[in-house]
Length: 456
Image (cartoon, rainbow, N blue to C red):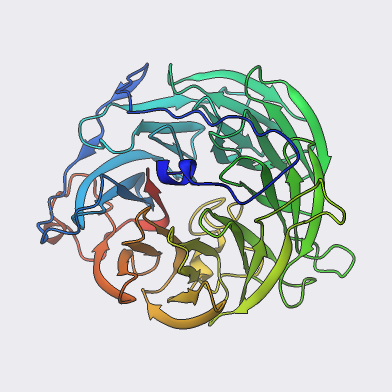
């Protein structure tokens, strides 16, 4: 969340008192145990770009022959700023307090200062040997990173200060956590439990479990509003009318579900997998992998202190030109972009690159389109061909760039929103980590990109 959004008036009027937002300036160059310099530079000369502030688009790739990587693209200059080697079989890229956190497949986390990929120490955080199946993670108000360990039914707190796991919090048996919703505006995190159809509320001040909240069937993702007042939990459902695809909305002061919103034109088969909170319009955009729709939830003006209460509602299910798997909204509120990967219905972070990129659903995500959605008309206005395997999209904070990852084309496309045109593409890093110049490497020996996040 950028400073301008923190300072603008909020349109969500509540009867309760909101927790103050803590603003932290600057980033610390932190080095801890097991720190090694594991990066190399791929210089790509490009014309100068727009004079925006420092920001990087970070593309996470998996490598069939070894270590995966984070490729950094400078937002203002459209140049590669560096490539950071991470662990084998990475599954998730998270961010908190200026740091990048990559969950690797070997029970480790690779972390570093995100905007300094060439000069910062690259640290390896080793998860406890009793923990397993870390599939996602999220941030807290203290800047720590919490993992969702689906295999061992627990969460690890990885400290940004000491760059190590400082505590493991055990969750109920069979909970199978799959996602963590939190941000700097709230001193609690919300752990989405796929196995028990509920959410664990954890206080980040002392790591105690505050409450367990029942939600919908097969919850798979969660996202917190920018002000920390609400959490939106995506429930995939079980392909029945009794337990359809839906979004459970949790009030973080009362810690109760205040609304359950069915999503998709046919909620019994919509199979939602992901949600994005639009800080400008205060909406939630939900991708439905079981059908060609993006659901839009109105989340502004929520008021529990009036009669009748003002609750979040479904605005529209937008029909797009393929099955979406990822979505992001421009910070100026004008447009929304959805990656139409045409993945198998129900594809999510549990099965996209797990158990391996070749046996997960990524191999069958053959869609090549990026949908452009008008945020006012709530309709798809055009599509762009970004390459086969369009599975992830993100935008920069100044609404000047859109980044779309094409896994099978092994590239990331950069789109200018003003013209809705692709300005350039960058290939994924080479599989051979010693290759600094792609032309010196064997043809087609590239890694497989599958996730993009823009920092800060």
